[in-house]
Amino acid sequence: MEDDYVAYLHAELLNRLDGKTKLLIYDIAVAPEQRRRGIATKLMQAALALGREVGAVRCWLLTEVENAAARGLYEKLGGDEWSAVGFGWRLE
Image (cartoon, rainbow, N blue to C red; front, side, top):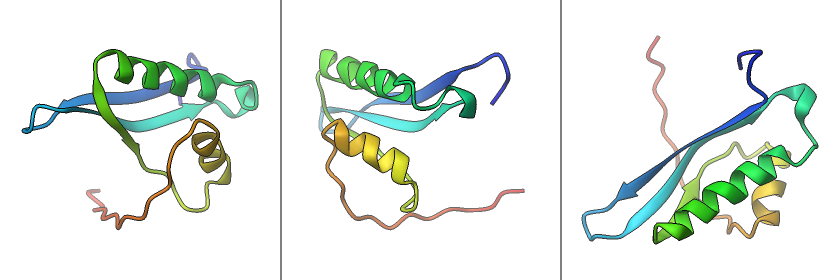
């Protein structure tokens, strides 16, 4: 993360073929020295509010199983944990 940034959230509204919209959150990060101040909570609340405002039917995001801090935040915000299989490719 660049020194100029305290935090960021990268998300996209996706219009599905069935006409419904979903909110995908790709990444959220807070600089280590800025953590535990509620910044991630506020970013997530803003993203979820935007999703509701535009009529999104669902919000999805992924996190690592061992990322207890993130999982705790998402649970606190009312997220439902679900199982999925992820695939990744090293492109370098």
